Amino acid sequence: MRLVVAALLILGLASCEESSFADGLFSVKDTSNRSYYPDDDPLVAAKVQFKEGNYGKSYTLFDKSLDVVPNDPAAWLGFAASADMLRRFDKADVAYKKLQPVIGNRIEFHNNYGYSLLLRGNLKGARKHFLKAYEMDPANEIAANNLELLRNSINFPKRASGDLKGI
Image (cartoon, rainbow, N blue to C red):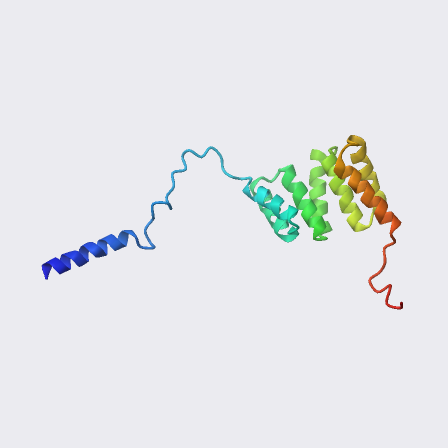
């Protein structure tokens, strides 16, 4: 009987070490060799979501990356582009105002802000920024594509949603 009680006591103690309340071997990692905090993780994830067309997710992730690094121009630019695609132009305007003094003379700013103006229907403003971007780098494919997009936007009239009901 004593042998059975001793065996049960040993089994009970052994099971306590592997319970859900104890720290397992892999849950306590040695992070002393880590030289940086992975603060770019939300930014990387946001860029992936934006490229896949998940603008709501990219908007949220760019916002999180701005919480980590508040003055990151890449995060502000991505946040503005995501806001544009969601038609949240009020949020995009805040981002572009923040970006203007930092990267206002770069091709990325003019391409993105011009595209934002194009989405809003401000074709003259979009043209101004697209031309600045094209003058900075005539070989830039994005700048050339934006000018072509603007030409196509001018050539095709914008119709109201119920415009063709009488036909």
